Length: 253
Image 1: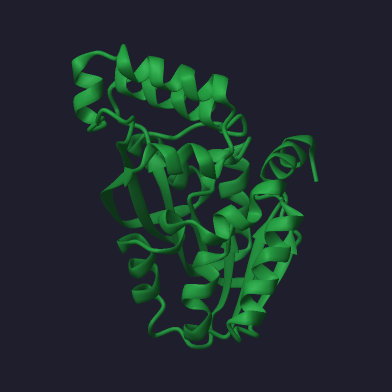
Image 2: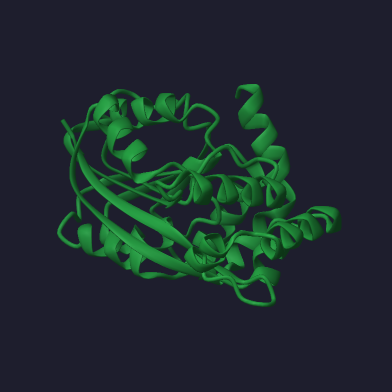
């Protein structure tokens, strides 16, 4: 792996079980949308790219022939392997790799899925090109991630608190950036679904084990934020707030 992937892996290694157990990650309308898209694909070979705690893999395993859960963090993959065995999901296998350099042949997969991962990729465009390379022409791709507002003020606030919370954060991309990047990587966009994701502040910082100084800095930024920032992110007194997410459905052109 390259150095950026090593950095992210080292950061998330001690947090693997936190993500397997995360309520935010193990449920949601976006996850059900993914499952619905795979209902009629029993012979599909699926790549769960940046699998984290493995929740996409667990949800779709019973619907398809095989799922490859891929992540740069070895302890995440150990946790996914153990959870899959415990759940009797024997068609899940794991592969350690960074999104920007995948150890799979061209067109190896019928479906590529990636959920809440892309904002950690150091080189997003390289990762999207790799996702396109390993997907069969005409194959299904679904990307889900938190997204930044198009407004510059709101975007800046989001990037700052995300970086303070998690030093492996790279960028939450705007919807317009996502649409352009997918086209450049060789995907044809079939549809997108925006959603809102409420987050409890204490859980949000506990999941990444954010240090106290950074937690205090985030709270200070929230308390001093302009009214339009507080309104957009639906901030409340304890620091809890709401993020924008986006599900993008595409196919390999």
